[in-house]
Length: 434
Image (cartoon, rainbow, N blue to C red):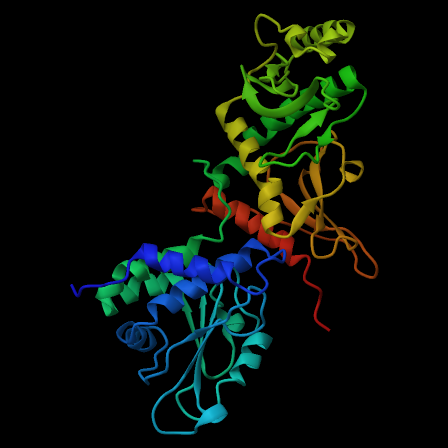
């Protein structure tokens, strides 16, 4: 194998330096744009090598014509192509010289209108190429694949398969670029779960609803309110009731000793409510008695250590599949991951309360805080048969409400699923054409 004098560390350092030096780096820029800027400069780094550039243009762009070195767009927010090079050799000079333009995406694909706009920048002579690089899952197909005549559509995955063979001296760089382009924009959700199996399982949906019913009833009994999601910042959404001003509240979250409902207070470990899913009259009566004891001994409101816990859990303890499904849904509702998509959690007063039929979170678009309100919801009926989430844009101005479900597909990882739900939510922010 030919020797390379470039390392992955050098490539990453080069790209990070260019991103941090962008003229608009101080502005609030979505994570996707920063990720695309990294990919842009990583690709620019390896294309500095004439041999690598020739191999790339021949193998991926289908254009063996030599070009100048590529110039990378400096700004994070831009409507220009990511990389531009001029075709060398005989032909028109100056602004009439044909060009090779590269447009890359780590999430979605450039619109047809944008591609047609860039096609006009290629120049009139032969040799001009517009190369679009996307994730394999985002590559347009069928009618969506139409575009300008000089468009060449490729993927990060194809680069990872073809370029190490075409340019073996820089195989390690091409493999890193391909992996980065395919996966770097995905949300970090490290849960070893199967979304397709969990969220479509009727028994898991029924069990989660049963535990939510217990949580809702306990919240009403002990605090006189229905719980809703808190606007507390962090990586975990908080479905709570009564937790404010340092006082003990009730939260629905990670299972503790079989109970998904647990008492929480600042700076202390959660204490289980001690009630699981209730199926029979005897369990219902035992749960009511335990809640009555809690209601009478309110000292625990200021001292969580005073919470009385039953010797054995009342009802059926939460199972691992139920807790896994809850964790997966909580990842979908994760405030930090939603912020990466351009959404902020709506104020507490706007949050929908948990009901006997539905669980939901309301959001605002960061780019249009006075615009429509968006929702992610689960349920919607008296009997839950699945846990497939729905995304909604509420009615606003002349636009009516729009909703659709995002069902997990076979083979999706947890990151894939969360990504697809958030993409669907973001698609509702795009105004209709015309």
